Image (cartoon, rainbow, N blue to C red):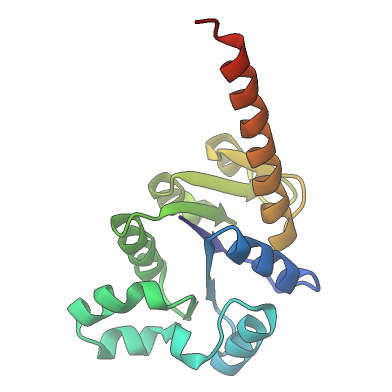
Length: 171
C-alpha cells in the first residue's frame, strides 16, 4: 500500500522497525552509497532484503534492458551506488505502480524527490532551513523506528477523528 524511501545508517532497532513496516504492508526501499557487500549485509540483517536478488546496482541498471528493469523494479528493495536521477526514476516507477511514496530527505539536492513524493520527511537535527520549510513532516529524531512510530500514531489519530465524525453526524 505504501513505499518508504530511507537514507540512513542502520541502527540497532532497524530490524524491528522494518518488521513493523512490513506488517503494516509498507515496502521499505533503501538506497545506499556503501560498498556492495556492506550494503547487502546491512540490508539483509535489518530485514529489508532476503537475498542479493533484491539488490540493484548502478551497473546492473545499465546492463538490464530498460523495459525489463521497469517491469522488475518492484522486486528490488535495495539500490546500491545509484545516481540521484536513477533514484528519482525508482520513485516514479513505484508511483506509477500505485504505491504511495514517502521520501526522507537529507540535503538540498533532495528537493526534487521531495516534490515527487506524496509525503516528504526531514530530520530536524540534520536538515537546513530550506528543507525544513518544504517538508511535510519534520522528525525530531532520525532512524527507522521513528517512521513506524509516526505511522502508528497517525493511524490512531485517523481512527479517533473518524469515530468522532461518525458519531457527530446526526441523521
